[in-house]
Length: 229
Image 1 (cartoon, rainbow, N blue to C red):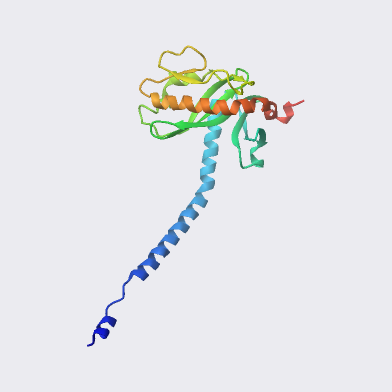
Image 2 (cartoon, rainbow, N blue to C red):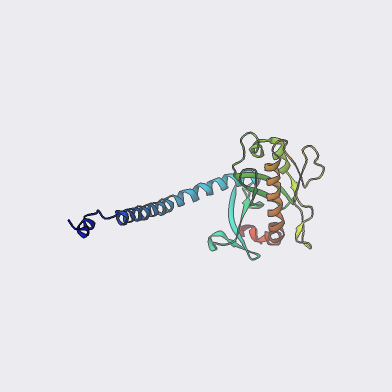
């Protein structure tokens, strides 16, 4: 048998077939990922909406119903009219009167970002409550920000008054050493969970500093039409 004939009898490399198979698997996998994402997106969105609704009752005391608005370029728009902007939730009492607003805030904790919702009462110019929406802090330590009663009491009436000339809070919200709180804009830290507690304070200060000076001049727009003269 000649050398040429021997070369012809050598089995061809299966690399092309393998590439075709792998490409097909990748295409099918990608399709399934997209399909699952599309199928689960409405469920995830609805679960998030329900979680926000439950949290709103806690952070806006006295509220029984809520509406979402979007702050966009200094204007308030109904959420359904726009897809861009920062969400602001208005809380209303049983008579339909505005009792407070809520917004989201976030900052880096020890393990990951801490996401929370906080309520603002324009009557006292103060934060009336917080609710952690998502976190991955260490159980028994970092999760004290959602369990420690003394820490949560910081937000019964945390001063967040605004200087409209400076377009900033009169006093920045700050974290102080556990047991040393002296002013209504200070947050008394949690012993043993300082990083997580500081993240909450940082998130609130950053959000309030940016949001409230823009929002307060627009508060009347949040009143329901039946309450307006």
